[in-house]
Image (cartoon, rainbow, N blue to C red; front, side, top):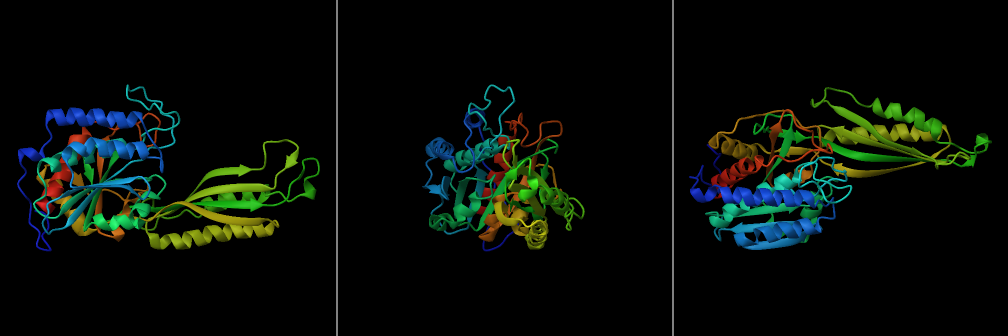
Length: 398
């Protein structure tokens, strides 16, 4: 049974209007493939957001808020009666990856593709919109949040910082993510930390160029870079996905100009820092910066730092997770706590303004991994995800 509190009801009876018809599934599947063929990366999702608004127009939402945090879209179904606001979130953005798959609906945009399944998440949200359009909540509001720029970690923060977000501020926030390697339709859902904290640290080392025949007249960053890269990697420790996990991954190194006659003056080292908790991240960043400063000083180099793709940890609130768990039980969907996901997820930002929880739903054990260039979201997950969200909405809002 779903948890009770704040005067809210227990599980409600699902009716035929809460289920997708075969025609719904066919139309939403075709729409998902349309999104897949026309991907837009983080911060560029203008067409994708407008397409979501167009597709849901027939459900006659009670309010639509566009341009949230840049390109975000909130579609509201309001009972007109007092009650909680439940937000259901999907991501708008694709990835800067060239698709190599051969499906008919493969990306038509060179160098961009939906290799993380966000097209499928949007389709699930659109399916929930169909359900809510036929039968409004009995109390409170449901908000479908199509969020931009998840892949960079900037989108959720921008949406929440937008003053217009106050009009849809939720009491509860829910999300899901497809998960490769997990049996199809099987769910991981745990209390506490669901996704790790991470951030990208760019370290720049600056010296002085010289003629390649007289390198001693310049100051090259190459020796410092060669020492620094393995020392950064050595910051990693603890059990993978364990509470003590600290992970530093060097992802990019660049030095000098592509010329044989110039000894270099400038080098960049990019490293992704990852911890289970936000609290551990400060110590890791301090240690990485100290190593870089030490390496630079030893060779008389200037140095600078900048941070990119900053993700807080994503923590599932126990009550919000219990509501999702009750929906899974009611729908007969197998689930277990699972592991903390090492990949980061900016949905955790919604946990700063509401009780939030995210689940992971399996796409199969023998399929391409997320971010692989031949990944394609399985259409059969759309009605399953819609059932989970519809049941959660009805149990909470009636």
